[in-house]
Image 1 (cartoon, rainbow, N blue to C red):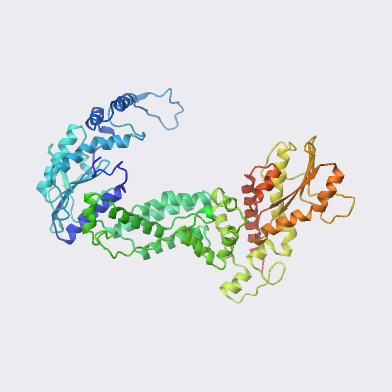
Image 2 (cartoon, rainbow, N blue to C red):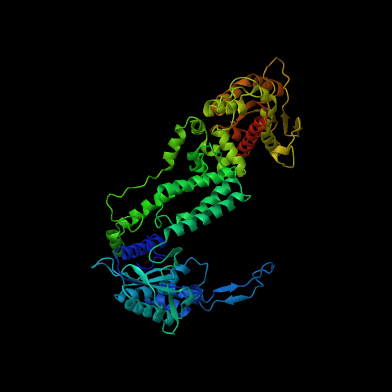
Length: 640
């Protein structure tokens, strides 16, 4: 494949290669007051017009293996398509298949490469003409830039351009491909200034229009003439970028899917321009700031929540949003490294002359490398924050299962507003009296508005307020217990129908021939035992085994401590049950999920003892987080 063809050629940067080369030429012509003649050529339905005879001929020209040629010829004879009308219920069997007599079959992975191969002889002819533009006296001649069928001819003057255009036209006519004359244009530059012209006449007497000094041509997605009008281009890109972002934020997608849509559909609008347009660090910071402002307006991000966490991957506890400044700086560095280490004549010539013609400044040895913040850098900043860092340290504790604890971020379906509120709770930036007194310092008295004790922190609200213990905390606890109870009832065929956990009402006793399942019942024993009312008790007669299941939703710091306390708490009861109920063993199973949804590494082992699947960890976590958010919302609605 010719080095001038950047479509389907491995080891290149695609269109950005060509745009940087083109920008270097344009800026050199402008700054050094040189002459240039260019022509943009657009083929009319190029993919659909290339003849099959030429597609087969080009395989012979490049000495493709005979067996492969025979196979491709056989495939070509079977190329079919069908036309379907919207709303039509006909299946493909009854559709009338249309044979493709001309053009290449779209949708096949080999088709783009085959198409590039079909146009490759044109590059050979243009390069063999010896005509074109030189960056320096003894440099390689640049006759054209080509990406798939997007062609730009380059010459030192109008005469050379006419000859190059004639070569192109003759080749195109020979393979029955036509110019889309309305979308073609030429431009002439003398002494660094665009000059008016009558255009250029083709063999069939049609004329290609000539660009004036105020007109631009959109080549490879970027508007250009003699260089790129950066201010206009930036404005256009920003309008398109924020237009898409607002559409995503107004959609009914979940919080996680909104972030994925931003990364996959919104960010590429700007990403394509990185390395091509000159974005300052101040402009990039302003763009990131405006994105966060729109997230805040959509209630997906609390204005005082951790900024670093917003740009950390979800599998590590962050929100997973791409950072514009980091994307730009990384792309510029990568592009520069690519050009500096590519051993191709044109690239070496561009590196030698680019003293500032492009944002890469390839010829500058003292180029200032922009700062690229990596994930670990952001995690360190997050960790170092007094308030924000508390959740980070808890999440990355030695006893915490990081993967399970971030399930709600990776696979959850919380609304963006709920996700943002939960993250604000974790970051401890909710407007509590404690926050107002010690962070905002507005003179608020730090007294809990519910229990009237000192210290209304977010930790106190979600797990330490005595007034909420028998109401709000018990409701959250029971939500988790219902999930476990229903799954055990289904497993032992004590119930037949599964319902959403928040609608499930456990019966005090469920029983069949194999098992008995108790819900929140005191166990009457021969001797007095204080801890005799576990959340769930299961008797498996077939296995001659009983299981005591107790649920807890403590604060993050007490995750492991509470689990051990639960196991010790019911030891006496377990011994009594062995004697009373004629079972061989009693297993104590603590199910502990923190108020922030953290899950201990030991929970997998406890679920295996109950022979329950691991997926219920995510369901229990979601139930806890939703109820924690509900508790905080209701608490904040109380009058101080």
